[in-house]
Structures are given as C-alpha cells and as structure tokens.
Length: 133
Image 1 (tube, rainbow, N blue to C red):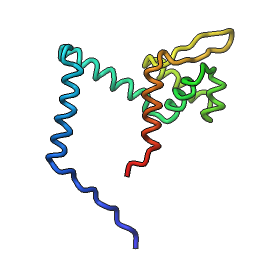
Image 2 (spheres, helix red, strand yellow):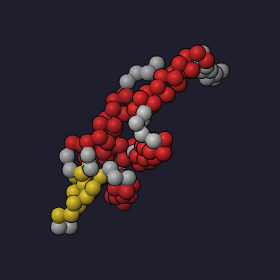
Image 3 (cartoon, one colour):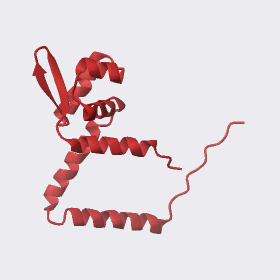
Image 4 (cartoon, rainbow, N blue to C red):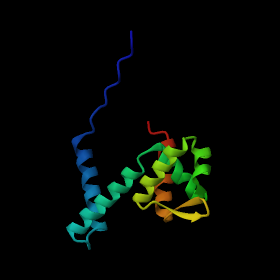
C-alpha cells in the first residue's frame, strides 16, 4: 500500500491577513516617496532579474563569478555543462545586466556587473540549504 501524500493544512485566515498587511506596510514604507508608476517599473525589473536567475546553471555561474572573473572554458569545467549551453546562459545573464564580458585576445573574461546579484544568489542558496520543516 503506497503512502498517501500528507495534505497541507491551510493557514488560518488571520495569519494570512496579518502577513499580507505586514508586506503591504513594508512595501508602502519602501516606496512611499516613489510614484505608483515607478514602483510598478521597479517590481517589473526585479521580476525580470529573478527570471534571468531562474536556472540552476545560471545560479552556479553567478556563484562562480562572485568568487572571481572567469572565461567560458573555466565555467564549463566548474559548472559541468557543455560550452554552447554555458554560452547561452551567459547571454541571458548579459542581457539581464547581471554579467559583462571583457575581451582579451581570443577569450572573454566574464564578471558580475555589481555585487548586489551575488548577495541575492548567495542568500537564496543559503536559504535553500536550510531545513524548513
């Protein structure tokens, strides 16, 4: 007899409402001086950034670039993905403004544009490793 999945119990409505109110309060304080249009644009840009990071390979690339600048062949060795796939992921990250490349002869050394994304990814990886039972 197979074990039946354990159903998730819904949160009490009051807890959900309190959580939403807290988030609304934080968002209101953060964006109080910004017009609504600017806040919407900021949210859209943040969502686009998170979509660009939404791949285990891209997360691994960002973690590696947080440590040091790397060429494609170095990323291929560390990430364990084929070179064309690593190049495609780098293109996504470049278009999202996460990484930049500097040509040196025949090679391009990739680096992070700034440390903000490295912190976001490191925090996400750390959070994923925690026990959330």
